[in-house]
Length: 85
Image 1 (spheres, rainbow, N blue to C red):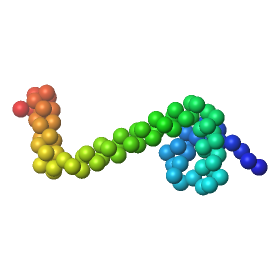
Image 2 (cartoon, rainbow, N blue to C red):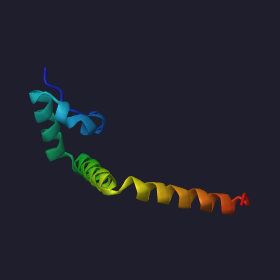
Image 3 (spheres, rainbow, N blue to C red):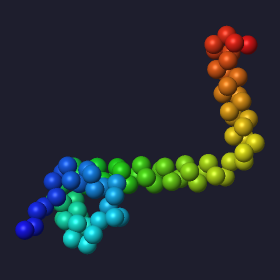
Image 4 (cartoon, rainbow, N blue to C red):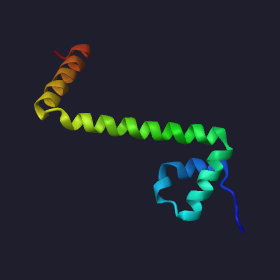
């Protein structure tokens, strides 16, 4: 017997939609067509994933020396704020 995904099912499946089987994927997409709230939620999760991927790509472009310099500046700032210098 066919059971339509609930909104709770959609919230769980959204982060793993690539792993859904054929019938689950159809069920997922049908629910999104019907439910505007879940459609907005799924879109938001997709945008977050895209932005996170962008951040990771940009981070790879930063030289290790720049990362070390930034870490040292942060540590120095923390030390100054805590009166350790």
